[in-house]
Amino acid sequence: MITAISNILTAFGLASASGLNAYIPLLIVALTARFTDLIKLHPPFDILANEWVIGALIVLLAIEMIVDKIPAADTLNDLIQTFVRPAAGAILFAASTNALDVHPVLAAILGLVLAFGVHAVKATARPVVTASTGGLGNAFVSVGEDVVAASVSVVAIIVPLIIGIVLAVIALWFVFFRRRKMV
Image (cartoon, one colour):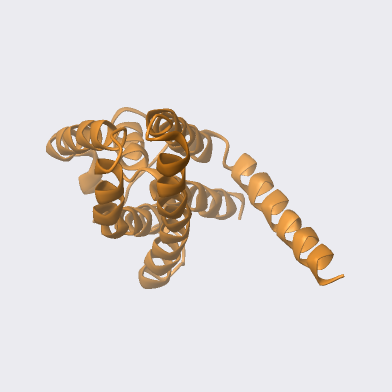
């Protein structure tokens, strides 16, 4: 039971992180599965640990990290990533819950929706950052997003309970905010 909850919290963390940057959590999962016992990927997701897939993820991450720091190019990148980030979230959620009794289609949909939600917030906020800073803030915001994506991914794998606590705090905040707005 503890393992199931841990895997689900890991799935939530990884799918959320992929909404910021698809390749960071995919690469972290791939490297962790390949070189440690912290993650055991079951077929068909074990392909992530293949050296060719890891190499491709490194190349895609390098491209993403460069393009995402350039004003205007980052907006085009976010448009393209509207399809990639949710797909990555779906893969990561399904891979994390693959050994559980969670139906793979349900897992993929949950990951897709979660990653898309995070991506939508990011893609909506980025043009505001570009306009309000004349493009100077883009690189800083992008680095911050990359750090958050990497941190959330690592925490989701090593200490998934923290993801659960963060989710609970966010839920309580929304309830408080919603209730306060109604009064």
